[in-house]
Image (tube, rainbow, N blue to C red; front, side):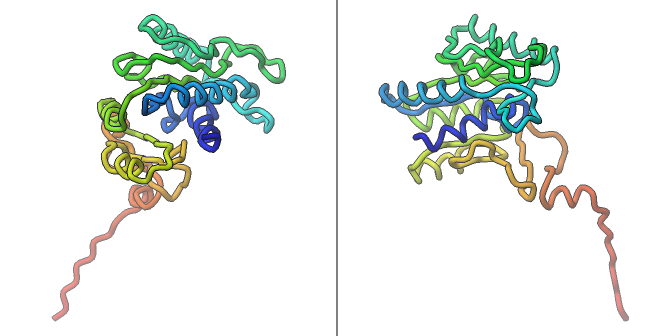
Length: 226
């Protein structure tokens, strides 16, 4: 289990949630309460000890959000989640410490919300902030159903040691980018950036061969020799 936590931390908080492939919702499958408790304790401990500060400082693990307006938007989402019934396991609305003594104008700490439900705005909307919404389901089928009912189908990841579950997730999850035990699911420039549904506009994906097609003029030459 420990091996999965760095990947989760990178996915949810490593970039302050400000990339379209950053995770936002964590679905834990199964009814093992002991596992859930132990797992969440470890995730929360890692999250609350993330170093927040100037993003180009190599000792810092999470930088600021885009601007003060973006911070306000993220805070509004967290407040909405609480009003809709989510509970705060880790409250990052005010960063406990900002390395370098910078003002907190654009800084937030990691926030973890439990008891999140599939109809909540913190699940249905893209927050683009350092938040993690956690929900529990009984089966992988239910988890995949939740993934597929989202209007956004950019990136989804599963952490498992079960090959059957990994294969089912790979084929049944409607997503442009699927990760198996990988938090950020398009880390290589030569892979296409394959968004789907509300996470894709246009006719070509970026990166990889499709990017070359986008920036290349194709010449058609028809020959007939007599």
